[in-house]
Length: 146
Image (cartoon, rainbow, N blue to C red; front, side, top):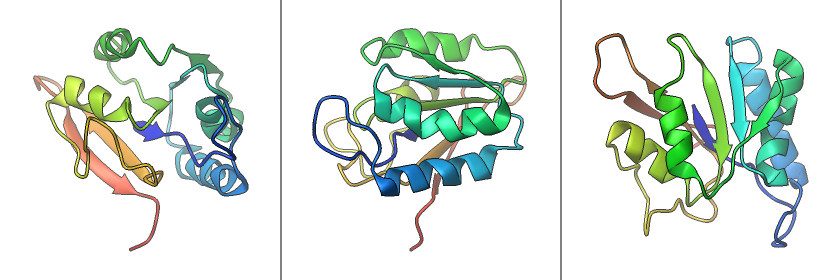
């Protein structure tokens, strides 16, 4: 599962989450807290780690840090994860589409110049790879109403 970090408090280089972002992070934890998540991965930036922090607390997992500029290394790691893994990745608007495309060949709706729209924080991308499949299937969910 791949999500963009929740809303940030400011435009500074490494901001914390805003109040709305903390609310969204808590909603993600509520949604996935009992889903059997096996690993949490975030970039080195506060906003991605804070997005997964409530889920980490609820699932007794540690948020593992991966470098945002090493996307292809992350994709390789995800491809080589053990069968049955349920990994949640929190990343950025300009990285999430690349992860999905590299793993599945799918271009997400609304992506321009290889990035999600600046105001798009609600998407949850679920990729599953059944036994024998050559590529994962992709389901796009939204945590915002219509």
